[in-house]
Image 1 (spheres, chains in turn green, yellow, cyan, blue):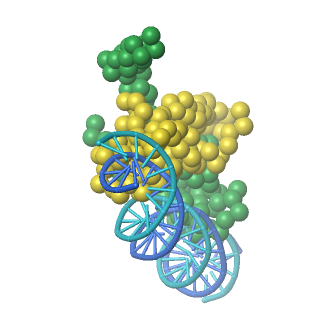
Image 2 (tube, each protein chain N blue to C red):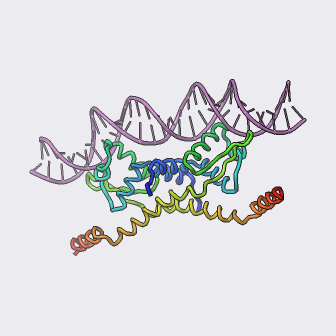
Image 3 (cartoon, helix red, strand yellow):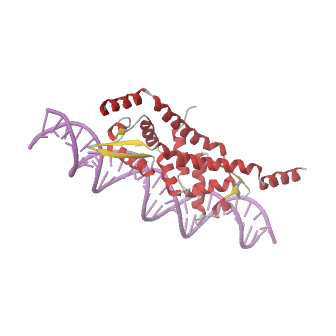
Length: 114
Length: 114
DNA sequence: CTGTTACTTAGCCATTCGGTTAAGTTTCAG
DNA sequence: CTGAAACTTAACCGAATGGCTAAGTAACAG
């Protein structure tokens, strides 16, 4: 349960680029090689590779090389940590709806208003 | 329904920093001034301000100035676009579970195996 | 062996990022 | 009016990002 904040950093960072999100989408249809992943983008191959390395080091994606082809595939579970972070906040925000400090804030406003 | 990709970029980017996420957490307990938000961090004020500007330009947070105090507060709805992005992918990934290409992949494996 | 395919590595470049200090500005308190 | 408080602006810094080209390696295909 030890949330590694740096892992979240890298995950969010990886997701903060349109091209990278595009590659994730492509991988949603199944594994793909570097060249296949590069195909939709107007980028040089080494640029694509850097994006893929960012994705891999974030844990969102895995790769293995067989022969001269490196195949990437999604780690679908990986998004869970992001989901978890969001869920935690939302839960907390709802909780503070009916908390004492909120109650006090409301009633003190009432007192001033009246 | 027009998903602005740049908005998602800025949202994920804003979330990719631990300090910024910390400020969001603080704002989960209610509005706060710049100084209050800065207090837990070992950072110069201008640095905190930059973080807050990143958060604000991502839409996760709003601020208004009254007197010499600028007060920040959460836009709790803002996380929805991130949630939505994640939900979309997960839905897509499940769908491809029982799609033709998957079926073909499975049966061709069978054919080879047998 | 000889290409060609499929990556890889290396180096460069401009911009952005996260951080700083120093010097404003504006407001409120006295 | 004077000073402290609460930002704000400006200028700078080193590292990371996103992009490139050029050159290298590794593995099939013939």
